[in-house]
Image (cartoon, rainbow, N blue to C red; front, side, top):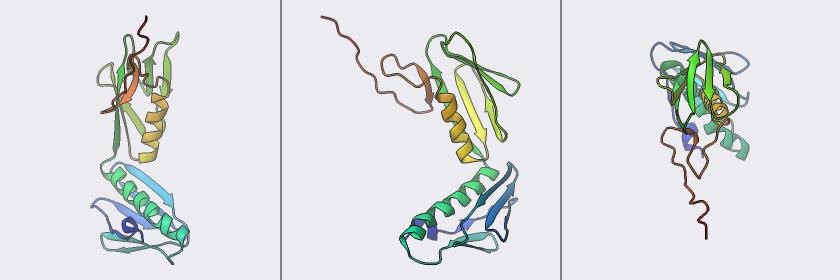
Length: 179
């Protein structure tokens, strides 16, 4: 039994939720519009400001997907109301970032600057030259874009240099000790 799948989904005010005949859930709110295709076997029931995802049977596959689709819908509702953010810090001498229009420009120790254009629905902020904040309504898009930024310089264990998520601890190694 999926405990997460059985939880009701509360719909906040200022959010419009619609389900069409192809079982596509569309959520519109102050931060944008998101949609998610749900398999036809699941039914979406809406009563006032509460939604339920109902599964047809207790087979293993439907039980495993029940909580997933309930969580995806709940994440869409949170995304269009409050949004998602990922905060990252740049560690290392000479490493820095800046914003030029809709492009994130980073100096990461390469012979060239790394330039990344913000995708649709995602915004980046650079409050100082060592901090990057990625914001957006879609949780998956925010996480993927933050991971793509981080891929340019993964944190290394000897000096701790690289791009780290906020609160991330790098396990440091000692290095060569000599004779």
